[in-house]
Length: 585
Picture 1 (cartoon, rainbow, N blue to C red):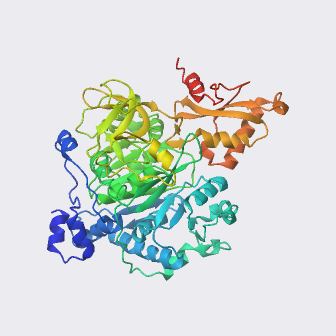
Picture 2 (cartoon, rainbow, N blue to C red):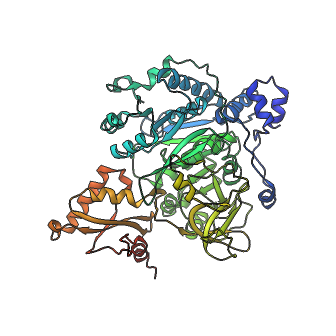
Picture 3 (cartoon, rainbow, N blue to C red):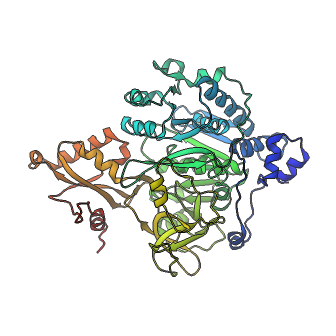
């Protein structure tokens, strides 16, 4: 029985009627894809005038659960803390009630109103999920940040977004307080920790929620209202704000859940991504709960990725679906996979960076399982993917996802011949795909530059074969993707230039067997450092960058040069340096 039948049979409130009239149905038994090619041709996703993910999916699953229509014993949320060995299992009814209380805490306790911006910098703790759901309910725009951010990064985000509130842990309080007075819009600071960990000028999250009521009427948001902001790196400046609406992510990820992840209510889904990245919204929030699946979260304070630890947990817990970066998979396939027994795992997804065919082969050989690749970006949902019933072609990211029309274009926006390299684009006129972002907030020039004719350009180069398979060739800009992290060269170059030893710097990607690519900096030295110990200076510069920006951005390689290649107009030719690193003639 689908939710349309459910909504016709039950007493309906206003929200329920809107769900039914919009044609949104809960996939109570998952979604059977018997003919993927047919769905690619025929499936479209329409955004209704009003939509709210918390009301129209989460609360509906809570009702289905209450009425015995979610026929599985798996929880909606399963959290495991590695350090304390604690576990927390919550139902959709629990999530619905908790997020209503947190919404009241934000509105009444913090004074936030509709479309105010709140920055959320939290690790993989339940409050991350409670807060984002609460923001969606209250029509408060949330923006997640990684725990690796430092004062300079936080200052940039607070000032650019005009955030009125920031929520983080006691460990991050010092970084916020170093810049808070310089951020005019910031009114409220909330710390998630014990009562004793509350700092002067900070409200305590637990106290706010304890006082709050669980009676909260969800705001009747329009599909086009802003819901989330993601800071995404660029090549010519600090990170820019990609704005998603209530429908672009909240409804758009229906395609991700259905076609890339193929989730069902009984699925237990583990996504390894960090909470500061859009991938967590993709695969640890919207997609699983659209299909009523269980979100599995493991929290650990160990910063370094341990492939054996992940493999052990896949053996220990009944996880059915795993989503990982290719970097993590490259580390996992180097282990003795045959020694692990996965009792429940049957579906592995890779996303975030290109996947090597060798990794697929080694994973399949060691586990008997395939890897299904997805391709998208912060600004979209999943644009291309390869589901199980689509033949595997090494090096390809699959075909365009139903709901998207992908083409390869020349620089004028014309579709090129099959097999010809060009710009990867999404057809967006006259009908804009639901999963496409609203634009770069307060940056109309950058937004306009992302479109060419009738297409949105993803900023990547690729080609398409005669069978509609898409092949990723490389980025058309200078963005570096290292272990799934997007790093803009400008941010690293700016940090380096603050050191007295550096006269000029140029940052490019460099190949790496484990991370795919890493940050490399070419540096010209100031006169007083010309004869210094370069090995010692390299280490000093690396540590220096870590103090100014998120540590994952630091240059793992540094080469000192006499001069940098430049254009006639004086612009540094990063492409020349990058080609040198990748040995491209």
